[in-house]
Image (cartoon, rainbow over all chains, first blue to last red):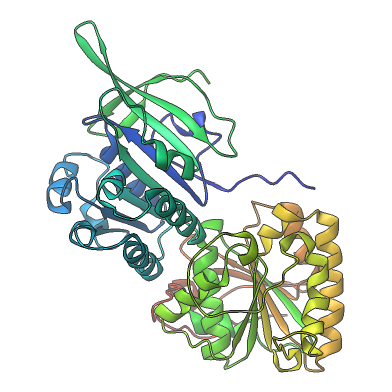
Length: 228
Length: 235
């Protein structure tokens, strides 16, 4: 049988694609996990705006971390954020109110409907971990159904995951997704440094180990050092 | 755009294969444009074989974008292997799965003969699509795919005197060998850009036909985009 290569889409994160054979598999679901201030939302925004620059449709679901209104005010500080994409190439959808009262199946149905309407090639759910803590249903089943559906809609989805101090990544969601990327903060002397690590990327011979990252106004999250 | 696409899918005698080249991120959108072209613009009846994902996704998409599915039959070759819980109308399932694609043409004929509870009358089918053809390579060798197409063409030619049109959407750069093989079976290839504009129509065995300026300017919107004049083909 022919060795079939995955189609891939560029992550939009300078230095990352070289670590993952050219980009994220398309379609796939990628979990970006990290603590507060590690750059998860900036990472996800860049993923969508980089796609929009290429003519790809983006859809951003916010849950219960930061309302879109405030997230966009902070995001406006980055050069890569183009307000002319808002509501067109990059569509924002708030799941917060729905999350307060719905079941897992109702949430899946809503996401299904919105994805079918927008037909995005890139999706973000930021953060997904809130859903787990609010859900009365079996979260493992929900995670499986969600990732299956998102891939079958033919999109690459980025889920952001909040982690508690001492925790590397949200365990339940990590089994359901195709890739796990860790954004880490590390105390080193007087400095707090940022790192990225590709923990898992199905179908990809990815670089292992921590790589330094920085967050700049121009490009958002960038990988500073990669042993290519 | 829908009209522009449907205009290049006409005028042929007998069964034909049309190959549409788009970037892989646009496969879903192109399939929806094609379904609109066949079902709404040309008022034809069709068969959609789903291999990449359960048929419910495309069905949901059509429903949401207002495309009438009355004249479309799905044959689902992947649902049994997908563990997907998405609800929707039941469709005939090709239970051998995508791993035995060579058997699919005869499966369609078996249905035509009333050999199962689902009835697919191929004599009433005007077009066939596969969602999507590149996925065949995930489950089959190139040799098996060639045997599938050889049998498929034989079956279609025997079913209906006025022919069945098959529209296949592919990204040439993803699977060059498969693309070239299907191209060799095709009557026309139609190239669309990343912006989903028609860039060129190639009639196999004839010189390249260029689309008109109006077509080049028309976006391939699936939400009621501007219809364009037919593409002028020069042989």
